[in-house]
Image 1 (tube, helix red, strand yellow):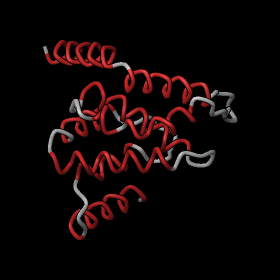
Image 2 (cartoon, helix red, strand yellow):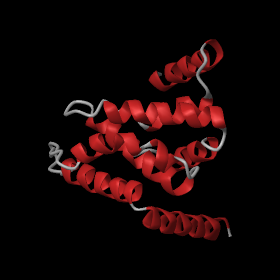
Image 3 (cartoon, rainbow, N blue to C red):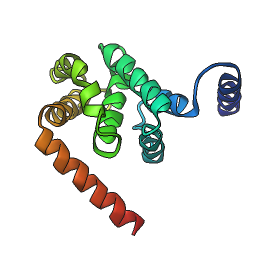
Amino acid sequence: ASSFFKEKIKTVRLALTNVTPAELLTEEATNGDSLAPDTRAMALISRAAFEVDDYWRIVDVLHKRLLRFDRKNWGASYKAMILLEHLLTHGPQRVAEDFQTDKDVIREMKSFQYVDEKGFNWGLSVGKKSELILKLLEDKKLLKEERARARKITNGIKG
C-alpha cells in the first residue's frame, strides 16, 4: 500500500510543482535508504543531464545531498557520490567542473567510519568512493580514460 501512495504523491508533485521527472528520479536515486541507486535510473539521469534545465536540477540535488553529509545522513551523500561517479563517466563533460566546489566535503568523507549491525564496514566503502571521485575530479587524464572506458563498455553492451 505504501508504494501506491508514494506513486500518487509523485504524480501530484509532478503535476502541481515545478519539479521535473529527472529531478524526482535524482532525489529517489539518492535517498537515504540502504539500497544502491538503480543502474537503469542512473542511466536515465545521465541521459537527462544532457538537457540544460534537467542538468542544473540534477546538479542541485547532488550538491545538496553532498553538503548534508554527516553521521546521520551519510547514506544519501554516499548514494550521491555513486551517482556523481556515474555522471562523471557517462554524463556531460562539464560535471567535473561543476563539482570542484564539493571537493572539501568529499575529502571529509574519506575519514567517515561506520560499521552496521551486520558487521558491514560502510565507512570503508564511503572512503573508497570518495577517494575515486576526488581522483576523477582532480586528474583530467584519468577522467578522460574512464569516460572512454565507460563509452566502450556501454557500446559493447548495446552491441
